[in-house]
Amino acid sequence: MKIEFDIKKYIDEIRKSDGYFHTFINKQNLAAGVLVLEPNEEDTQEPHDSDELYYVIYGDGFLKINNKDYDISEGKAYYVQKNIPHKFFGNKKELIVLYFFSGPDS
Image 1 (tube, rainbow, N blue to C red):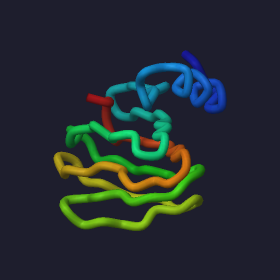
Image 2: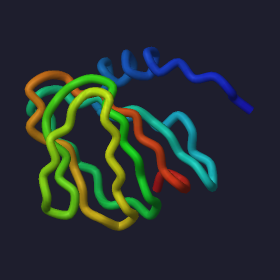
Image 3: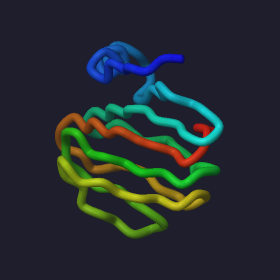
Image 4: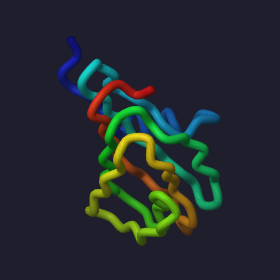
């Protein structure tokens, strides 16, 4: 079982890929990953089957949760209940966010 995760490596891999996120833990009771959105890049995620917590490492912009916009900033965390529509948008610089699910990433 893997215990240690190199988030910087995952961020570099995302930057070189066509995707914008990487889930590095995906277990029955917990999933975790990192997402990287460039300015004006579209967040295409759909509502999830598990509650989710986002922690902003770097960047700015907004997080729309159930049609309400929240200013996001570094060092803040945001909770999204399962099955609730949400997406990041409006970032003027690169956005880097850790995410955690209360169940598997589905």
